[in-house]
Image (cartoon, rainbow, N blue to C red; front, side):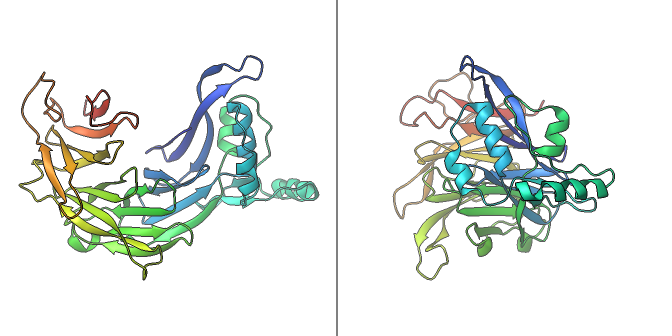
Length: 346
């Protein structure tokens, strides 16, 4: 599925619809609205099959888990086997938002609780209370708003300003986050242990807002880019004294002169084999960097060269500032790069 967060203050989940009759895909549809918030959402990261954390224009990071009713409907709509996910589900049937609150509360529905739930619903005048659904196709707008929320399972406190970016390891057990910062003291990267929902480390190297964080596909590296026009690369090192059994330590850092960027770096992306990473900047350039051997760190493979229409150049300048960059996970940098997705300002 595809999970997205927006300034419309919602998190939305889209998936394919597969009919039982013909087993053909009938396009992508919105099948869930896990979070309806009171602040503009800025970032999210998936943790596990049915879980995510999100950040908004507030200082809190919120974690969510998919409820049983949603997982069952998701399996029917997409034609997938979700028995294992249902067995691991521990957050109840659904969720609802209190009249005066922002946290989705879990609802555990059993046959014995049906009457109590209906009575409670009648007492809450004007309140959209959760009702279990049985869906075989995409839900309606009313169903999305009222009955596809996910329970909130945690709140993470640690940042002094609005959360800017969140990243998760491929196994969903470790998070990295950063917030808006005008000073060095606020520009730290916090490492979280998802198992216990606790803060385990703080990485302080940037001077201004860390705009984007991303783990390499093998989880050996954590990359951060910043409004101070630099990037930092942290490598995983085994550390028995750490709660995780390892820590991320700085192994390379791009200075103002080395980064090749003269303006804020908005985004970064890793190659599928975790040997290269790309940085996209407001200065209308994209640069590609190569990760060296152990102890060597990072060096420039190709800088932001001012060349156009060349097949050998892997980084170039554009007519507009580049907001986002992403690389296909199925293409290796050892061969010709066929799919590098960019978003520029219109």
